[in-house]
Length: 110
Image (cartoon, rainbow, N blue to C red; front, side, top):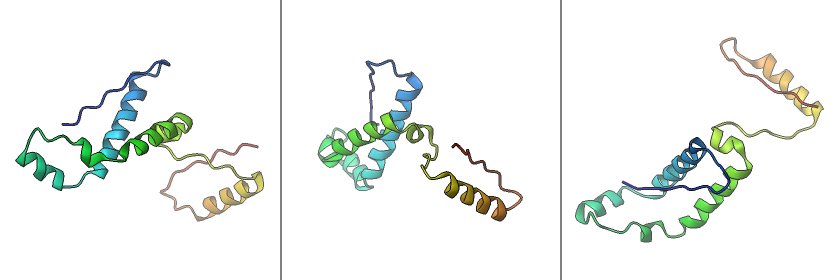
């Protein structure tokens, strides 16, 4: 098991911190290869940190991104800034080509 711990000095909720930890855990798993399991079978006390070299910058970037982009931790699509005319054209195209079984919504702000 990989144990991750989060602490907040600014009142982040447990759910928010848990989401960040889950995101970081998934990122760690994507960095590690199947060879890690072989290493742990041979030596259960193996220190994993050398295999994670350089991931600290990636983890810090993930945390920073999550702080400025709520969509990151909400598993949502980020909003895209575009002109009202372009948004209206895009909405029209999507509505015209939408299959009847597909449900979607666009928020149009001006």
